[in-house]
Image (tube, rainbow, N blue to C red; front, side, top):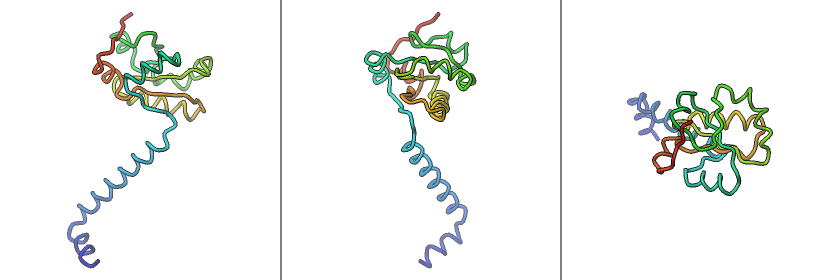
Length: 141
């Protein structure tokens, strides 16, 4: 035990770095385990759309949406999710699938709706980039 205390005393910055990394890892594992929504891959999204008639919601900016979006997607930027949550209640019983460019904004949208007691909420893991990597089409309007 003395050898560990001596190491910590001699290498305090390394020890602090180790503690920070461990805390961040535990936080990630804990948040993944307690998440109230599910992350889906592109093939899983196709199954959800085809089998359960999912409502697809694009949380990107308007310019990103116009560059190309998933067919039949509803445009609802992340900044409007909370205010427009009442509009989403008309889709009760249907899965709500959110996506963005990389997955960050759609995760945030899912967190917001989960706090508002929405269930059956999903996010496209990796966003449009993962969709394109899976050779899935985008439409332009």
